[in-house]
Image 1 (cartoon, rainbow, N blue to C red):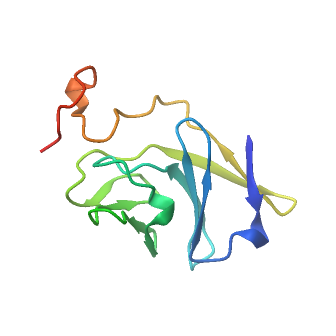
Image 2 (cartoon, one colour; image 1 turned 120 degrees about the vertical axis):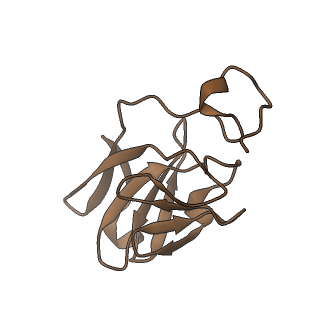
Length: 123
């Protein structure tokens, strides 16, 4: 488990960015739920922790792609690839992230089937 921050340092409606490799964003929804996803938008290189949180969705600050924090699923274009999600544990007032064992997706702007072909833009 990776300690992210204290619960009081992450008020509802806010996000916290962990400088892991790859970075992880932790979100505290207005409903009191806490979610963690890979921080980088799958469309282009933008931090989702800098995006807009509404309900269980985060909107990318760069091109307005939306992702469901519960599943990582894309809920709005131009992104087409989902985010990797991570388990969150709150213990003794501290928020911890349990990183996913799934491999991270390809870098932003690279098609899933062409992960080895740098510069291949996703449509």
